[in-house]
Length: 150
Image 1 (tube, rainbow, N blue to C red):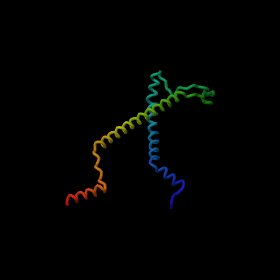
Image 2: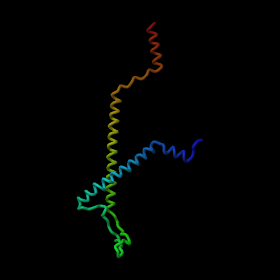
Image 3: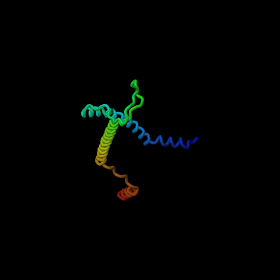
Image 4: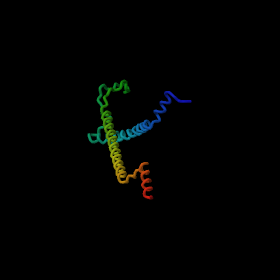
């Protein structure tokens, strides 16, 4: 029975090489993003915070409306805040991810150019094989040899 319709089209789409490559790239990109986020959150931002006066960027916020507590100290209404410190951390995170991707692509491009140059050098160094004689050349060679033998 011949498959047709939506499922057949989906199977063709999903088994294309570039779709699989893209999926692998997304998965690796997600893992890479976690590494860079950890670098930003756990290494870089604490160092920057320490350098500018022991500030934890995630704690930086502007309180628009303070929280409301009852008599026992329980929160009745949560505070309304603008968490600009978290935003700063996300911006630094983005910039580092972009920088890492830029550097990785630059290294890959340079390696690709280097490999291409090496292949061109190898191709230029190897002598090109002589082309096979055409039918006319073979026939003329046979005629010449016959005339020599007479």
